[in-house]
Image: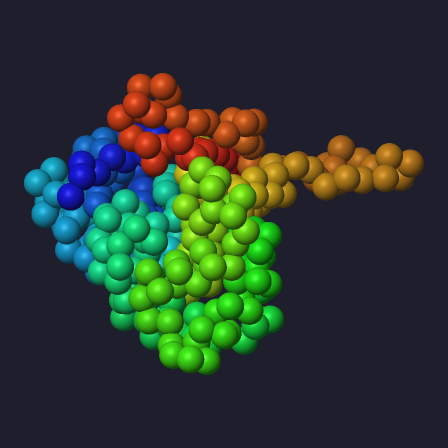
Length: 311
């Protein structure tokens, strides 16, 4: 397996403004790259790290134990943040990090079915204990549902043609593997698209993965809960890799950091004018340095946004 890089690592650590005695959350443990660095900086604090993928929990545990033991690993989706922490008596946090999307090891593991580059059963579940998988979506969703997710989650222009061909193919026999799905997608696209840079199945695979894991709803939930739980001075750092994720983050942060518009014609006392409790640390997203891009291709599309609680 290729070396695993933690995307925008130094920028995240700087953005969190870590206190040695603080309570921090890594919502996306993965292989523990970000968590390991946070843990080194909080000798008197505690780290809570979430992952839906049990493999990630198992593989990160030893790495973190070699640093310290003041951490708790939670096998659950990050949208369960409030519930999981309140069950442990934690109602306020000093900072949280989210590194959205699929982790590199999940993509690199051909058997998981996330990648169109490996022939594998259609799966794409981040949490392998959940029931719904990519096979179910591809073979049981009707034409209109497929078109909706391809448009909405993949921004795929040829959603209708692809959905139509999926229906045709599965009427003959179910589409069971990633390569079978890739062939159906390729057969649905005009030559000019097939000849473009980038894999022709990328958008559809993204759409199915988001649907299987309910990723966008998960993100919407955790952003609100994390901002609610931040202590004053606490920060939430979010790395996104595609426009749908980034839009959700940008809008959620904007909503919390912008005062509601009031009618200037209505006289108001100073104490009645609403103040905001959050501020954007960076107006524009932070992107990877040239040095990082040379080392890690995945960082090309990464955008980091940071919000701080100020009141």
